[in-house]
Image 1 (cartoon, rainbow, N blue to C red):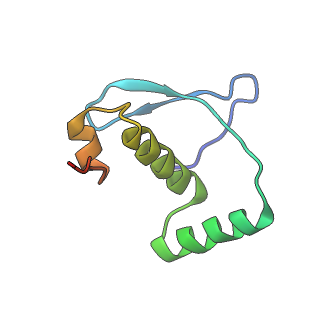
Image 2 (cartoon, one colour):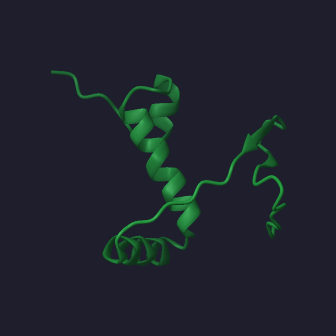
Length: 83
């Protein structure tokens, strides 16, 4: 699926697996060239694109900070270690 941006509104709707609409917004960022090169190497190895990788990393960090349910955390591979 090719994304053609609407330059008046950078948000777009996508259908999730449960057929519920969720609104996505465009977010851009800058980082050091070395970090971007590392991201590019990882995504090339995994067969992903930058956006997929960055979404995954953000979700895992939010799960690590307990912003998601236990079920979602488990699905993302984030478990709390019991003392």
